[in-house]
Each structure stands twice: as structure tokens, then as C-alpha cells.
Image (cartoon, each protein chain N blue to C red):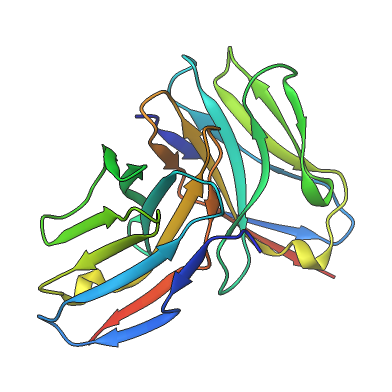
Length: 111
Length: 112
């Protein structure tokens, strides 16, 4: 158990809908990262937050947004969902060290 | 951001045989290197990491990796694999831009 908690584990929704994925980092970790894992694109870095502020941005679509709250948990919001957004979404957290610890992921299926 | 190349997409191996998974990264400037393992329907687990110091890094489950700056490589090895090592393995690299970049993954299938 990495100490990073993601909810829900599975999510099935229809095209055009909006969903929110939640991540609770390891105790004491200030950084939260979001990744998307799909069969065709592999593991893609989406965005990183550090102590509530956006620190780095990757291949995140404009329909996607994230935030980190004062209690350090983070949410990834996906809107206007398309079939191609079906993927496994991972959250990871870290302290000041370069290594990141990953949650179990949320499997999103868009139908 | 770093670019990471895993040279083998699939590696079949017999139980108790050695295995090597190859990984190359794009730049040797201030790089941190990692190997993660993903078992079926699970998240990513950190196997080992290179941050600085000794170029031979030992990790969990008997795995080790060698950092080679001149060849920009970070190959993963295990001298004797078990059936339970069947999984997907990801090499990852990070520079000072905080972005952790992953390779495409190598699927290791261990056969009895």
C-alpha cells in the first residue's frame, strides 16, 4: 500500500458528461501528480500541484482541470467526456524528494 | 522534459532464468531515474531509484539497475525470475522540471 488513495476505483459514464476523480496523497506529501494511462498513449503526465499551486503542466486537455485543496487532497475534473477519454487515471504524491508514489488508479469507462 | 525509451515491448523468460530490461533516456543532465512495476489491475509500485551516488542500485524483489551516464541508459536486471515477476515494467526519468516521463513499458511473462 503506497498510502495514496484514489476514489472511485471504477467509473462508467456517458459521452458528454462530467466526472470528478479524487486523490488523497500520502501523509505529509505536498506534491500531487495526475497521469493518464491508455493503451494507445501509455502513461501521460497531466499536471502537478505543489501545496495548492500548479507547478507543472503536461498533456492535459482543456476539457480537463485539476485543483489541490488546503487539506492537500486533489481532484481531477473531466468534462464533455469522449469515448477516447476512457483510461486509467493515476494520482501520485511526493514530498521534496524526486520519487513519486502512485495510487491504485481510477478506471474510467466512457460509453 | 525527459524522453524515455524502453527497447523491448515484450520479454518472455523461463522461471529461474535471468532477465534484463533495457531503458534509455534523453539527457544526462541532472536526471533522476526510476523503475516501476505494474501487476495486472494494480497501480504502479516503485522498484528502485537512482538519485545520485553509486551507479548500481538495488531495489525490492531482487531487482537491480545500473546507471550509465555515457550511454544514457538505466537497464534493469534480475538474476533469477519467479512466476510472480510476471508484470509490466516501466522506466521513468525526471529532470528539474518536475515532470516524470515514462517509457512505453515492457511486459515480462515468466513461464514455468
